[in-house]
Length: 282
Image (tube, rainbow, N blue to C red; front, side, top):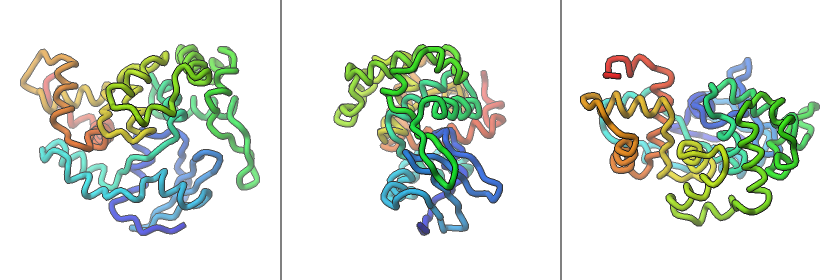
């Protein structure tokens, strides 16, 4: 389908670290797996071309109904956020399948973006359900049950290291129903974080990533090493001893109703422009 998509930039959206099954093509477009479909995405000006899955599925995944300009207007009007918005203009948060999103971020701990993509691809090839697309075999992201039935050795072979143990244990809790992901949407934010953190390998950051990108919870504000540096050096530059708790209190009161969106703009900016943090005290 062709969509007129103002305030949309495909490159920032797919390369900002929120999803791991997309690759850039030689023609400047992108190809990725969404559910059991291989999706191609390209953009020319304001025209977004999406193929490979039903229009409703694609519109939901890319959150095409959202008024991005209105969302950005809720961000704090400070120099740092203005630079982040200018750099990442048109970046949208995707709405990913919750288990896939959660499991992918369990695999992400202490790894770079490219490495996470490789681990996720290996996991899908090892345990995902195969399907044919365009004359070649592709693989869906494995359901929790498929991961739960795997051996530690199978997961280790996907080059996820110590994360293999955590992912296997988490999948078994989900598959057994002891942690029910389908109930997360009805929970308030603190309860949802608490529930997800029952899973091995899920701390505050992974829980927030899953809630933001998988459940669309804008209260979620993942604090990884980049965001912690940004908060400390851009917003607390004159203070030496700022506790993690103070950073959490600050982001909850400062970044507004779309704090999760603001976080991703800030993350994308500082990760690609580390010099922006250089002048601030360490």
